[in-house]
Length: 75
Image (cartoon, rainbow, N blue to C red; front, side):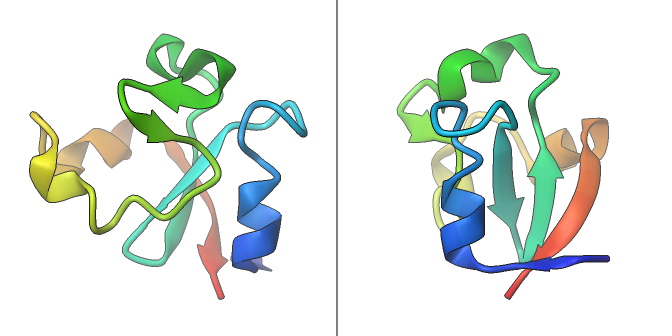
């Protein structure tokens, strides 16, 4: 898998580039196809970030990432 920096991930926020990406446990997922991530925001979470520390507060488990394509690793 390709390795991306935090800066490269940050550009995939639904604003600066058309891709909407998030990271979890060092893996970057493309969530562009999700209607819940339109415009780069999902409730109080912003795309282009590592959501590892935020997931415990979410109403779902990490299994939610199984729906999305893993496109890289976070450096």
